[in-house]
Length: 159
Image (cartoon, rainbow, N blue to C red):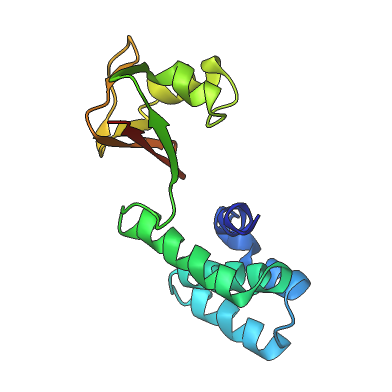
C-alpha cells in the first residue's frame, strides 16, 4: 500500500538514495548528479528521500496518494502530529487491556510484540508515554493510541 511504500523508502540508509534514484526513477542522470553533489556539500538527505518516495509512490499508485503520504509523513515525523486518517474503533467498556485490544484488532502481531514495544517506551496514549504495566487503559470519550513510530488508532467509547 502507498503508506507502507512511502515509509519503507523513507527508512533507507542515506548512502543508497542516489542508487535508488538511478534504478527506480526516470529522472535524468544530470538531475541525479546534482542531488548527489548537493548531499555531498551537506544538504539534508531527508529532502531527497521525500522526493524519491514521492516519485516511487506516484509511479506505482498515484500522484494524489503520493502527495497525501508525504503530507502524513511530515505531520507524523517532523511536526509530531496525528495523520489525517486514523483507524477508529468503537468500544462499550470504559476500561481495556491495551495489549489484548491491540492484538485483537491486529494492530500488533502478538502479545509479546506488544510487550516489547511497551518495554521500549513505544506506546503512547493521548500523547503521553503509556507506562501502566497492568496494561489497563481508561476510555472516557475518545483516546488516541500510538504504537511504535507510525501506527495510530482512535478508540471511541459508545454512549
